[in-house]
Length: 323
Figure 1 (tube, rainbow, N blue to C red):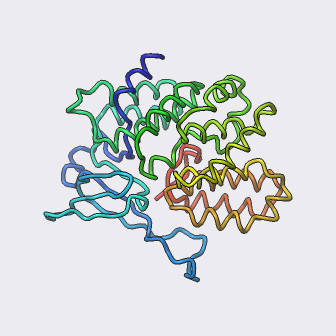
Figure 2: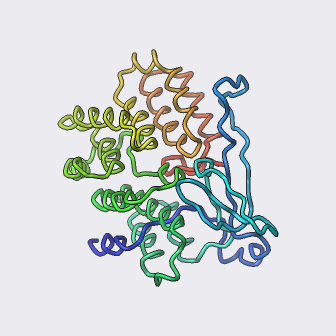
C-alpha cells in the first residue's frame, strides 16, 4: 500500500455526499449540480426555544463557486452574484450527478468493503489529470473518507498519513467532522493500532495528535499520556475545532459517577457545537450513558441519533436517516 500514500501526497481529498447514479442521469440533468444543506444560524444562548429536537435546515440548490474554511459561495438560479454563507453552517453537500468512479468507491464504503473502498477512493483523485481533478473541497472529503476506510480496514498508518496531509491546509467543519477519531472505543483493542498511534504521538499536526490520542485512550500503557494530550489540545487556542473535539473526547474515560453528575453540562456542550460536528460526540455520548447504566439517558440519545442526527457519520448505524 505505500503507493497509495504516495499518490495522495500530491492531492487533498474532497467533501460531498452523492445522490446521483448512472441510472439517474436523465432526471438529474434538469437539476442544479449541487444541493447544500445548511444548519440554522447560531441561536443566542438566551433563546429559550432552543431544545433537543431536529432543528430545521436550509437547502440551497445551485452551483458551488467556492467552499473553504471561511465560507461557501453558490450561484442559485439565474443569479449573477453568488449567495455566500458561513462555512460552519454547511452540514452536507449532495451531487445530483456524481462521477461513476466516485459513486462506485462510496458504494464499496457503505457496503462495508473498506479494504476495497480505500484504494478506490484514492483513485478518484490520483488517477485524474491535474486539470480534471475535483475541486479542492471535494478532494478533501474523498480523502477523509479514505482515511475512514483505512481506519476500518486495519490500516492505521495510512489513516494517519492521510490526516497529516489533509491537515496541511485549513479544512471546513463538514470535513473535520469525519476525522478518523475513535469515538466508540474499539480501536484500543488492536495492538497494531496502538503501536502505530504511539509512533505518531509527536506529530506536528494537531489533527494527527487528536486522532492518535483517541486511539490510545483504552491502552493501559498509553492511556495517561493520551488523556494529558487531550487536555492540552482542548486548552490550546490556535485551532478552535480541534479544541472542541478534544474536549468531547476527554469525557470518554470519565467514570460513571462523573458522567452522571455532569450529564447536563456535557449535553449542553454538544448542543453548543456547530451542527457539522455534533453527530460523532452524540454517538460517543450514547456509549457513555449506556456504560454508566443511565437507561433513560441512553433511550433519549438513541432516539436522537435515529430521528435527529444532525449529519451523517460513518459510526451511525446504516439504517439511520440523516437530513
